[in-house]
Length: 581
Image: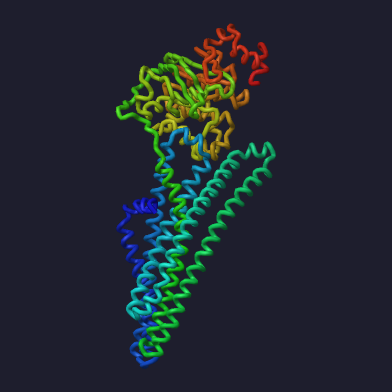
């Protein structure tokens, strides 16, 4: 229960409300405990002694007790729910902050749906643990303690005989609780698998339909659903066994009460009203025990989610900045890569001894086969990954010695697949610089050749685009990404195959915008279409994680190496119609 104690620490800011909620719970529970005493007085005084005054008192008491109970029940429900919701918000924020700080390597290893499941399914289970289960636990616990106290007051000998079964109930709950927690972990994992599959299938719906794989995806979903069903039914099985076990032990206790209590009434050692009240308290005792057994089972299942949440929260965060890291001043854009070695997996290098020297304002192109390491070099410059050997410096500053924010603020990236947000066009472009004015956003859009198509949208710059900008064409999305980069005004620019997915007409428009964007900036272009890099100051040919050739377009053609080979494949010895092959 260590993690449950950690979870309760999130309640500290709301201790005053929690104290008030507990008062409400205890008062509401006390009202329930008063009702058996009313029955005792009804049997012993009103029916046996014909005491009419007591009858009137009992009638008034019932109304008053239920009125008080209703008021305090509302208070307990509202306050505990408020605390639970606030804690869930706080935990969800902590988790989101954690994911935002995790390195790219984490997201390479974990599916998006799995990450989403932590913040949705697992946090929802925490809400259950804090709200529903906590209310019921305190309520039933109060009734349990109060019932025991009243039973001892009425007849201590009968109480001792009745309470013999409680250790047996505790042992049963302990045994079933361990199994329920283990199964709860499986349930949360199955829920995460379903979320991952949904995210993957829906986000790739075009691929699914293009390959006519709807039935295949349905089968995958059905299989995951069956696994989730099996885990859920295992939980039901355990819970269903726990409840009758506790009920049976409670029935044994009631049997003792009826037998021994009836004997005492017959022998005049106990009044009939006291026995009825005692039996009612015993039933009140049995019900809380049974409900607490169910709460305990549900709590153990929720604890599996709590453990998963804290496992994420406890993940070590990479130290992005050294203690003596300094902010990178405004740069000119001189980039030096010296003998860099890097691998995504330990023992497998994606780059081997890569070196290059890029002067401010130069355009550098990376070409080569797929998987050669082109994008890897581009990912290392903004420190999305940490190099294993060598060094990367900008204007003489080793990028490992500067504050990460100050480094990335001066680097702009236009990826192959532009990610836009489900907000307005204006806000999507302003993402490049959050304090930009509307006029600055519009100027950036004009520089990116995007202003004309934006103004043709239903609400112009105030048009809300769909998820990931799917309501726009590929060329339109790219121009918005370029506008975003222009607004950021970085000194170093990384273009990761920014036009490779576009048709010829869109490519020309986007390329014109890119040419404008690269003026005066140090630019790294990862190219698939060689026609986009003919004017590069230096072209680096990457293969197998190494630089095989470098030079200008003309120099590399004269060398007759890998670049010349790639050129001939695309242009067929000058046949431009072959471009893009």
